[in-house]
Structures are given as C-alpha cells and as structure tokens.
Length: 128
Length: 128
DNA sequence: TTGTCTGCAAAATATTTGCAGGGAA
DNA sequence: TTCCCTGCAAATATTTTGCAGACAA
Image (cartoon, rainbow over all chains, first blue to last red; front, side):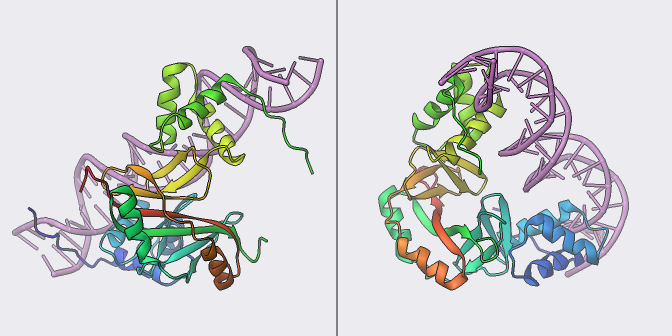
C-alpha cells in the first residue's frame, strides 16, 4: 500500500486553482486554459487538465458533469446546477440537497450510494 | 417556420432502436454500434450516432449524461440513475421524481426550468 | 420522382499520456 | 538530491459532418 503522494505547490497549479476560484460561471477546461494562458503564455493544456483532475480528486474543486462536457466549480459542498439548453450557461442552484434520496436509491438498487448530482435543464433569462 | 421533417423508417434506424430497447444496461454509443454491427456489419458509426441523436430528439429514447460520456435509455419518463464509480455500470433508480424541485430552482435562479436529471454515484454490488 | 438516409472518410472536439528536462522541498 | 511536475507532442476517445449514391414513400 503506497503512502499518499507528496504534492508540491507549483506556480501552474496555483494559476489553475485561481482561475477556477476567481470566477463563478463554472468554466470548462478550455476556458480555464485560456484564462491561465493570459497569466502564463507557456502553460500547456496537459498541465491544465492534469491539475484540474488533481484538484478535483483531492476535493479542492468540484467537477460538474453536464451535457456537452465537464465544468469546474469552486464550491465543493453538495449542491445542484442549472444549465441553459440554448447557450450552455451553468449557475449554482440553491436547492435543498436531499440526503434522504441517497438512502432511497441505495435501498432500491443495492448500490452503496455516496452522493448524487442534479442538473436542471431549461432556459436562462437571456435565452428565454 | 419549416414544417416537421418527414421521417423514414429505415432498417438501420430500427436496428439502433432495437439495440437500445433490447437491453437494460444503458449502453454507450459505442456499445450500441458494436451490437448493431452483429446484425449488419455494414452499418457505420455515423449512422448510429445520427440515429441515436434523432431518436433522442424526438423523445423515443433518452440520453443520460453521466461522467465518462453519454448513455442511452429506453425509458423516457423522468427518472434517476445510479452509476458505479469503479466499473461505470448504470442502472435505473426508482426514486420519486421531485417536480417541486424544478419550481424551487426556477425561483432561485431566474431560469425557466423544464426538467432535471439526477445521477447517484457509488459502488455497485460487485465492486463494493 | 422527391428528398431523407446511408456508408465512408475526414474533421472537429475533448482529454490523456510518454518522455526528457525543470524545479520544489 | 529526490522525485513530482511541466511543456511538448503524439495518442486516444468521442462525436460530427461533407459528399455522392441508395432507398423509403
């Protein structure tokens, strides 16, 4: 059983984290890449993807799976998202997290249920 | 405003629909492709994707967005899914659809909310 | 006959990974 | 000095699309 890998604080990792933390529109990996490139034109896509996955794995940021690809979120508590089916905008949805639903799903399926994610679909104020 | 396009019943489209309807494990596009190829070795990926999208658009099947890609489902009523984070298996979760949540999300965000999808994450009986 | 649909292939999109050098601790 | 991390580039993976011929209605 290997010990936990010792992480290092690199400038690139901090830039990626800052890019996610500094905005509230749930950017895609490509948008994060574009943003960090403005600070450091040398940073590569591979590094951005690696750090997004690493930060998500360790729980510092959250990966939100929505139609069309992944989005990244600075909030890591259980919460929902609303996505516009026309322009793709994603915002947080302050809807009560129903922890009871996890137990219901576990009982019905035999799975060990750890969490759930809910994505609402509709039209944003601009697109409707 | 263009009239609705007149759809045609092709052998390929029926094979794709049968492949989704005939199984209950929420296949990926690639799995559907593999299955229809056994019936018709000439069918192309493009045709499979086109028909999956077409059937999904017209509401005959459902596209389920989960981490790792899209899955297709013969059930089109609002229902949830449970996914194993280890092996990727997806099953239906007979959890009560909370229509009230849509209104709650709409009020909180200003979006017009039409529906929502919930994906539970955990471990299936085999992987736990 | 009309116009949708198909197979093929190329393109577009999204993400991962091998490798050799760089740098944090 | 160790070994995790980076840039680069190639490899994967997934899905879409242009085109000419095929076929359902």
